[in-house]
Image (cartoon, rainbow, N blue to C red; front, side, top):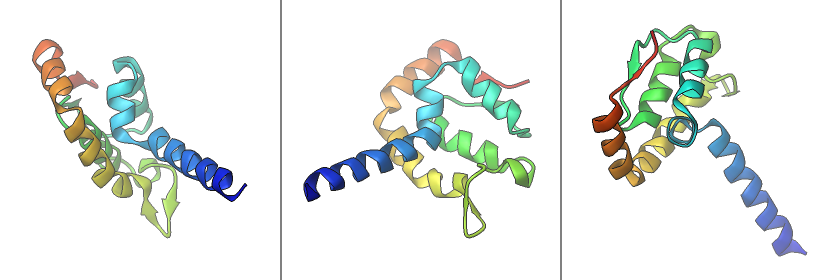
Length: 111
């Protein structure tokens, strides 16, 4: 019973992390969703490179009005700041794919 609770808790935690993860947003979802979300957060970025796009997404979220910096905050620290290291690791794993997509499609244009 205890093992089941621990497994479910870990699965729930991973799901919550990936739901807000910049890499999951930029690599696993469509370009139109990523552009719509960044526009909705009123970022000042004009484009996002596909290489290390999760980190770029998080930095774009932080490069906007303070109220748009991730929605969730822990003790005043925006979620996007906490997500940058995780996105950096995940972006490294998907680097071959994002290199191909950058070469084939170019940057994600927000404007």
